[in-house]
Image (cartoon, rainbow, N blue to C red; front, side, top):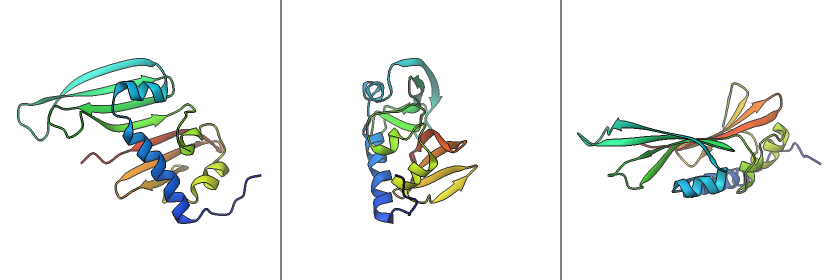
Length: 152
């Protein structure tokens, strides 16, 4: 049975941080494919680097079976692949937060506690000092989980 008592802050933070740690550990297209299923579409766009004059980076927009991911590939970055946006719309393995697709809003609140912010019916949780996790709610159930890491 679902309890509607808020989860203590340290548990909420632990559940969100676990998901963010997992998401940030996905460091290659192979890792993403293992997490989100087969690649359905992959578009690469060349863009100028904002920090190195004359350098051209690649912006990858990839649609998987269970997620949509945008990442940057830059030869001068600390990480070869920098994820800038992940929208998970299908149930995944991994931390409990990523298995909430199609579950009720009450189940989200049981796992994560009250959100840090509300926006358009969505629940927004801080992930550390800079990253955000947004749980999109549609008619009382989870439509998607969006990870927005800080990319500086």
